[in-house]
Length: 85
Ligand SMILES: [Zn+2]
Ligand SMILES: [Zn+2]
Ligand SMILES: [Zn+2]
Image 1 (tube, rainbow, N blue to C red):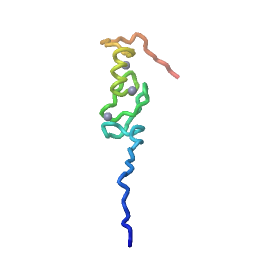
Image 2: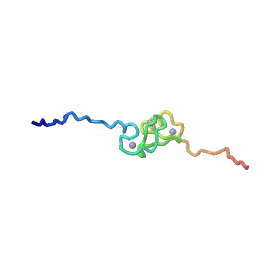
Image 3: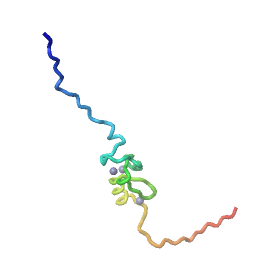
Image 4: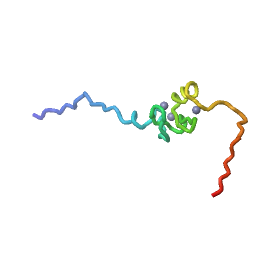
């Protein structure tokens, strides 16, 4: 007279909610943070410009709209520092 235990068929699936925080869609460890949107970027997605780190998206935007670095070649130094303490 033992009643068979029924296993609840409705398994509770837990979605990992932490990878959106610091894990990356490409599954690589973050090496830097985008200085624009603050998103973590891996070594491959990591872009650098003007001394800042960017994700691919923000880098694209940066070079198109906000980049201060102009393609100037042969910059001349007219001011030379020669400080002697
Ligand atoms: Zn970004
Ligand atoms: Zn990546
Ligand atoms: Zn730039």
